[in-house]
Image 1 (tube, rainbow, N blue to C red):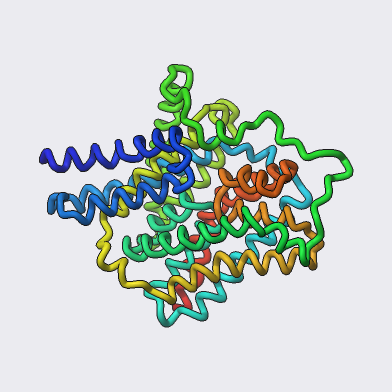
Image 2 (image 1 turned 45 degrees about the vertical axis):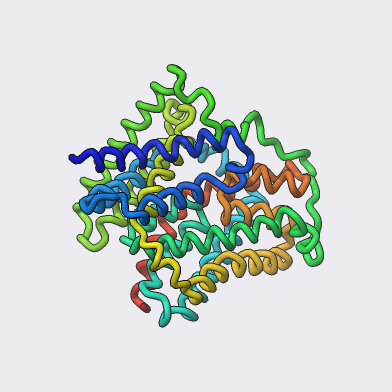
Length: 387
């Protein structure tokens, strides 16, 4: 192994850690987002001509290994029993949100299927990201063997459109939705309790990560994640070869959720953050494989497909919410959880000046993490038959 390859691998591992450190120090970094920064860093390194010719093989292995290892770690922290017990508006809005996302993805498929290459794979990715966020979209890239340029272009459009969406929601979104949806009212049984859960501690903070009481259990969780990956890889050989990669992702998701029912595993701190750190490594590596010159060729059809999936699903969700008598705040927090993922829930709830809806957002967002991979694979292979 050459010194250039060693330095490249070191960069892939250290760069996300540095970005996470800077995010904790500077609010500007947090506003831009670790995922976007990692994509930019990877793209710069991959396009300035410093990577050796043999780099691709190592990059390819990184992209194939990081997501399957990260997924169980992300799922270990789920409290499925608690979230399943939260009935009512949360699950009604979740089902409505999932329906509208799938409806817009199907509609966009029929509109653009003649002008977007391998659109069935794009449909699978959009299903993943609008039910579970970046981890699920990354999982769909692996499961469906999506071309790197298509993946990056789709995610680039998603990030740009998502930023516009957040500006709207955090500014005038509530006032707009209140024009045709009823306002939020506290449940008759009292306020919704989030318990003692600290969202930043649960999903974002890496503080204390290297303390013995945290680091050693995380190492054990990492070992379990490797074991789940190995078992899933072995079982995938029982499936047809053209479905084996997707089978690995679905088996990993299933085993990860099952492990979250084990109290000793679920109580391990920082597993979510560890999984997200590995996802950031994936972001750096996959963007370093992209040819920026190809990304400069804007695909307007792909852009509009992403826009339809994001904005169209949220608009349809709001219109149907009027029929099902769901309030404006619940619609906004559910849409934000699906489109932006659970860590954005407290941010949106703060903008709405309504902390009571945090639990609803968590139920919707975490459920999306759990089922997004299943939906993404099912929809992609279903639509492949019509491509």
